Amino acid sequence: MRGGSISTVLRVAFVMSFMGSWYCCMGDKGTASFYFAHFGPTACYGNDTSQIPEDNNVARASDAIWDNGAACGRQYNVTCTGTMDGTIQGSTPITCKNVSVVVKIVDNCSAGCRGTIDLAQNAFEEIAVPAAGEVYIDYEQV
Image 1: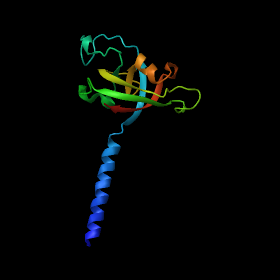
Image 2: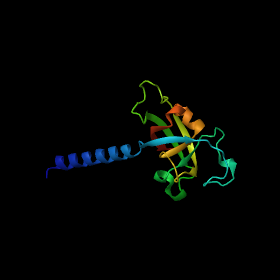
Image 3: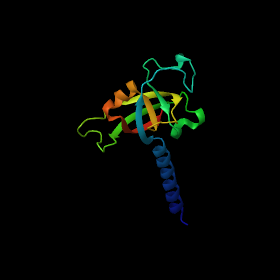
Image 4: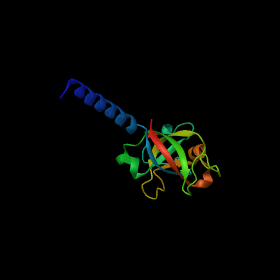
């Protein structure tokens, strides 16, 4: 093999590994619904309300991200990307808002969870119109 060929193979391998690591960190796709947060005992913090952020932007994790409780305290950046009826961001009627919200996982919603992540109503209202009920999202741990 000529020296140039080895160099080319190494360059391609480097670029591929870089692109793979870049892609892995872009986030995941899922769905979000909302609930009326009451800040009673949570699976993560019991009755310790000091763990609730001031803006009350909290969420319950489905089994997809719960990770046997390891999700407690994780924060996710969540963006609405479309509705269940096929409306995508930028289409009418406008359901998704062109913003993201950062939420903190404080509870588990494996039983009866409608989405990948169940946002407190105020957090859901930051990214989508509540009438949508459930929306498609991109989410990424921050």
